[in-house]
Image (cartoon, rainbow, N blue to C red):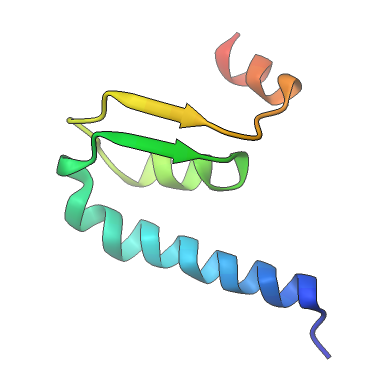
Length: 71
């Protein structure tokens, strides 16, 4: 039996994959801002080229992760 957490993770992972492999490649040149959490950040940032991006918001970013990214 699949637990509720496993089902939610599977659903979120499926949605992220669809976003990264089907949606972002079609619209990446028009994206002007992104709001990402640590769970999706690496996938979304590495899948596309965002020439129009001028705002990146990171939410729920713990201090230890922020220091690894920005230092």
